[in-house]
Length: 337
Ligand code: AMP
Ligand code: MG
Image (cartoon, rainbow, N blue to C red; front, side, top):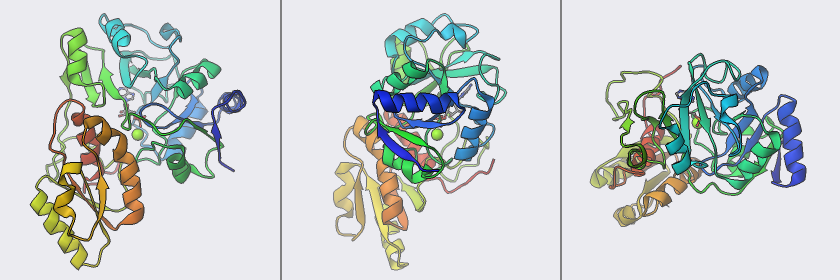
């Protein structure tokens, strides 16, 4: 199969629509990362997405819809505070997990009695979703566990020859996946942190909790399947909090004959300037770090044998999502499903 990358035009949207209604998959841009889209009502299209990504069968998918889509077509119950969240943040990088079952293919939620729904803000995503006018499941368009894609070229690297079409909507501005927020209980619970933060959600509905599985390197894994290596570049990785320790690690890797790269926030770059390593600048602000992270991890896997990452100093707010991705990308434990 030849994989075409096409700009978003009425022709490419018609082509994408045809592929979707024929049960195929199409890569689409969103404001977070690129997604691998398929018809959420079509069992075999959804199964195809799991197969082509090599995604674990127990990791449910998010249904994407355009902003005028009638949500009652796919959800059973709209929790009382959901409207306020939609009005505040959607379209945007927030996925809401509703109570629902049986409206879309059973493969979407992997047997859970909930459905995750997202309304992306990206113009290209909206145009595509309006064209098909059905819910489209669209997990990140990367081979499972590999770094998520923030450009059409990243998608091509993972799926060349495996999917027919990549709609090119440019570089993704957000850079990390949507916040996933469970709204089935009395107060919202964040299952996956992202650029819509706990504080932002609590600011609208009064309260918000964060589900935080253990993520410390070396810590005993309590919940396999939650804590598995994810978003990972194909090079050896190590994450340090202490800059001096990171410098030592660079020197040890170099002595072992490895090509070494360092990924850190801008202000720490000078600490590595004399080490003779490749430097990747994560930036200064939380937004910059989110939007650069995956692109730099993909550059690193091409350029080095060992990537030494240094945890940014800033924590909380939008950094929670950035640190979650960086930590998982650098985990040495690789939990098999
Ligand atoms: P991805 O599509 O690769 O961005 O991953 C989707 C994320 O949403 C995963 O972390 C899933 O576990 C989560 N997710 C999707 N559907 C549900 C659901 N019904 N309940 C809880 N989490 C979900
Ligand atoms: Mg993913």
